[in-house]
Length: 150
Image 1 (tube, rainbow, N blue to C red):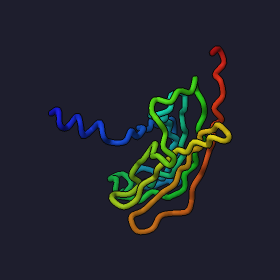
Image 2 (spheres, rainbow, N blue to C red; image 1 turned 60 degrees about the vertical axis):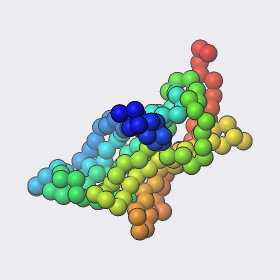
Image 3 (cartoon, rainbow, N blue to C red; image 1 turned 45 degrees about the horizontal axis):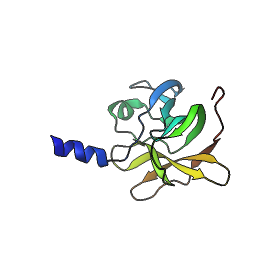
Image 4 (cartoon, rainbow, N blue to C red; image 1 turned 45 degrees about the vertical axis):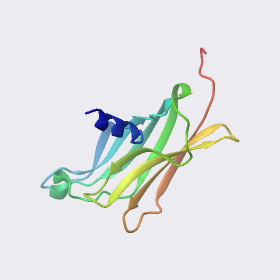
């Protein structure tokens, strides 16, 4: 048991998303509708930062069974929601969030960069695939500012 805990400690910290809401975009007679889903996740290494991600989710029979491939488009907005504190040292291009968007080959991920010159955190969302990724992406930045009352 101790060996498994040691291995788990070596895995990168990746945030889990909480669904905030959704809207239907295409009605499906069988299975769930196609949707745009809005999710929130907190940066696991930066206290005081929450990111909001909107992305397409494919419905229908395949979507209901988890077999459909979701579209590559996504939008992201990250905000300072409290005092910013670094829990660990940050690495540029470090994965903050990752979710599978097809059964095997495609993922949507968010990576973080630290712009030292402008004292800002930059978050990039993109989709990749084992054979060929997508150039579609979105970026957001948060200036690191003092939090009121501190």
